[in-house]
Picture 1 (cartoon, helix red, strand yellow):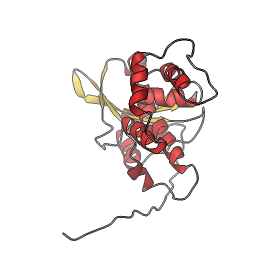
Picture 2 (spheres, rainbow, N blue to C red; picture 1 turned 30 degrees about the vertical axis):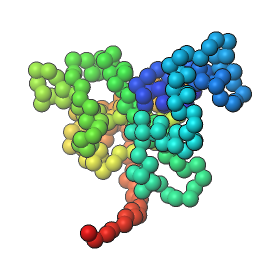
Picture 3 (tube, helix red, strand yellow; picture 1 turned 45 degrees about the vertical axis):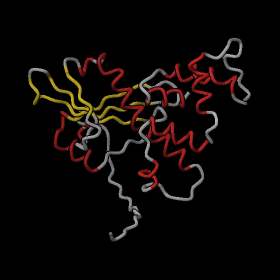
Length: 218
């Protein structure tokens, strides 16, 4: 269920659709599930299978990662090396706290009274300390800054980068922390406006990382 939720929301699709496609391909691969074996495989699914079934697992995984905006090189710089399963863990965490939670926000925003009457702009690539900027059509200076975080379970820890924390401290009530909970089962959300002044207590932590590069003179 966690995989269906995370991958479904990350791709802007329904989690049930991910499950249905898994069942569609089950009869074509060796596993204990039967899937949709009582009818022929849909032609477009069969075409995908025939196109990619000769890829080895590592190459196919890299192809799927590229659809989701996952950059192994970036995460290898901040993840400790040599721990079993670390790549899968980093990948899942990236999806949960990134694309999946952001897509969840975009899918429910229009129906939330807190954000009624606002226009939405995705600012995740701008590096401005929040993920979405919500503005009113008649007053573009009246805006809300939305920072989205995701949790695998119903409860857990959320972290703010120095840029996000400073932005929250500057914008105060215009900064909104949107937390998506429980990707493991059924995602739901909670909204924290001016999170630094509410009942959330953020504790400063520090981590030293080493970044390796190779230089050449040309």
